[in-house]
Amino acid sequence: MHALVKSRPEPGLWCAEVPVPEPGINDVLIRVHKTGICGTDLHIYEWDEWARSTIVTPLIIGHEFVGEVAAVGANVADLRAGEIVSGEGHVVCGRCRNCLAGRRHLCAHTQGVGVNRAGAFAEYVCVPMSNVWRHSPHVPEDVAAIFDPFGNAVHTALSFPVLGEDVLITGAGPIGIMATAVVRHAGARHVVVTDVNPKRLALARRLGATVGIDPRSEPLSAVQERLGMREGFDVGLEMSGSPTALRDMLDNLCHGGKIAMLGIPRRSEAIDWRKVIFNMITIKGIYGREMYETWYLMTVMLESGLDISPVITHRLPWYEYEQGFAVMRAGDAAKVVLDWRA
Ligand code: NAD
Ligand code: ZN
Image (cartoon, rainbow, N blue to C red; front, side, top):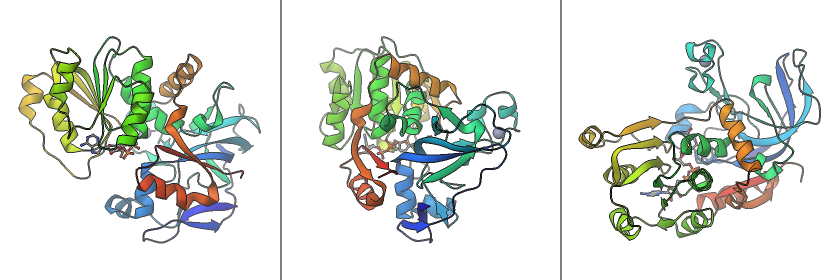
């Protein structure tokens, strides 16, 4: 089969002919239909510090996908060939305290599809049956392909109640844009989104932001005043990885405010803990999605009118992946979806 492989420890990603994976007795072999390119894939492509310390080459990368069940292992009784599925990208150990207690998203030994084991940028991918999510027929395939990052957005956005609340989202990348639509759907009052990229801010406004601003040109205090807000944002979703954005968020939160942190800073960064303490702020770190409550919530929100499809700005055949990575690198794209049947 064709696959996009990180063949060598240097920048780049290469198309290769590789064997179709053999499913084990508990595995599901999936014929990939569509995949999303994630920021993580871009890091692996660029071979940055994180990628150099994490990825063992050669590796088929990619973890955002939708496809159909092609074959199942002998122990898999409830999935049939042809069913449309995605895979949860975190393969958990099943044996640590959290896994045994049913808190699989808190597993101490997570393995990432396309990071620590063969990924989905290929005609076929193999995952354990416990990682397979069967899609509702109401979910379009393009959207199903990005359930993984959509799940990051939903898990972060719904970490704290947002009904009637004023929400600040820093970073209008694909995840920040989807989170905007989610908190809007979940009944937030004002949704203020910040980014330094005007195209992405425009998309955030389209998906429901009350205001989308470049924090370098208008301070958040001025936005609060403009919106008639008096005590600060109730909930902050950090989705940029920028330490400046986090510090700005801390300065603009109400007393008792809540922060869900998804964005990954490039290095260890300091914040003023006195603000956290005296303003009684709660900070929650987010990694991945909840298995499988987030997947359920994504599905029912789509079925009840949530539309995140405008976040997909580019659709390409898989062999034009270089172009897909180029538009992502340039900040021109939000979500890029590759078609593996093209
Ligand atoms: P992205 O890099 O496409 O988006 C980040 C956005 O932040 C960009 O649009 C950028 O212009 C903007 N930004 C940069 N500096 C800013 C500033 N000072 N203020 C406001 N915005 C600023 O990433 P994404 O795919 O949308 O993911 C969002 C973040 O979440 C990234 O940091 C990513 O690494 C991280 N992530 C975490 C998890 C997890 O499980 N914790 C999963 C996926 C992604
Ligand atoms: Zn575990």
